Length: 226
Image 1 (tube, helix red, strand yellow):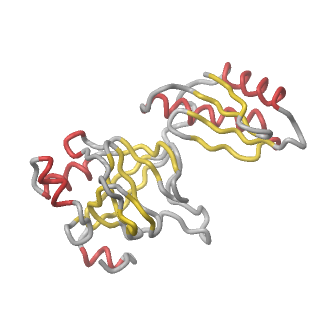
Image 2: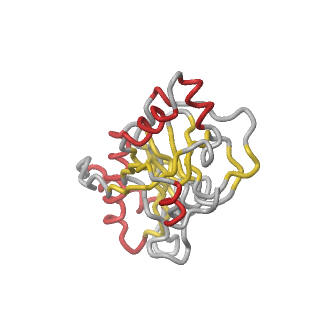
């Protein structure tokens, strides 16, 4: 574990060098411990694959005090104490109509479309980080048989709800945006809604499963036309 300054009001805590469920669990446990240790002096915590950004109130405390309290909290931390998070089921309409890269991904993998769908929906994915855009959750790890590199030329416009694969990660695009991931389907649920509470259906540490649904069900749940 390493602590480094990240500005006038922030410290970056590194808890590993690789992406793994074990390191992710350590990050989650550290977030809980740090939140308890800093209390009202804490402004925000931003967990990622193997790090935790700690943003504090510089009017109430300073680097020295925060660093001391964080180290003390980590020395008393029990890995896994934060729990396994929630399990969230996201419905997906898988098809060449809703996922423009589904056929090519299946062909490159030497699999049928149905086999790709079965492999993608059979796994339980961990939310490792949220970034790129509000509600964009990086999920891992995809079955290596359907892992696929990013597109050589990113699309200028990826639709909201697009379910995609890049290497051994998968994600749901929360809004229309550019993107270079392989599109395999659409999710009708909103991954980010600033008017809702909570604003996102998943958070770091949660687990996600994808459930195949029909086109009719996708539209009935509020999915955008495909």
